[in-house]
Image 1 (spheres, helix red, strand yellow):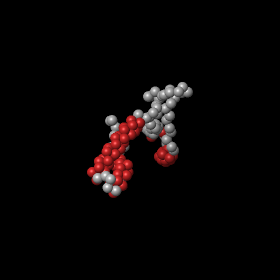
Image 2 (cartoon, rainbow, N blue to C red):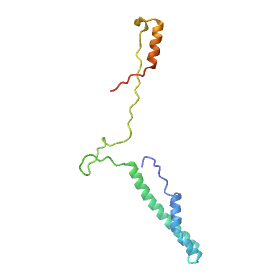
Image 3 (tube, rainbow, N blue to C red):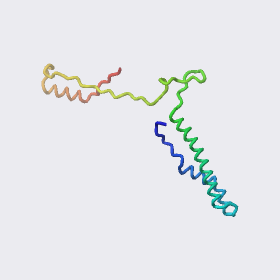
Image 4 (tube, helix red, strand yellow):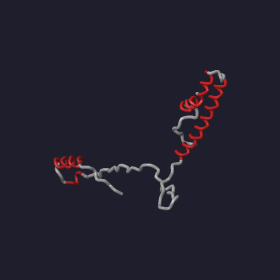
Length: 133
């Protein structure tokens, strides 16, 4: 698998705890003298290895499901699926439009400096026009 998954490893706390819970009846047999400590630890080891194998299968299945999400069902026909180009792959957001100011030749406006200041203040408080397309 090329992508790193967020799943825990094969040997982890819940797997060891499940093995201990499944092997716990052996502790009663040890206390009654029906099992030796070596036999009890062997049972725990075998049960824990079985739990690790089961978790490895579940982990591989989960990693496969996370790596290959199901595509959206399209159409009324049963089993018709979207092509790869039609599948939803993520959220698409519109990029913010940046409006570049157009340069103005101040000398060509034939305005007094006071009118130019008023015009520049008024333009700076107006929202920028949106360009769609």
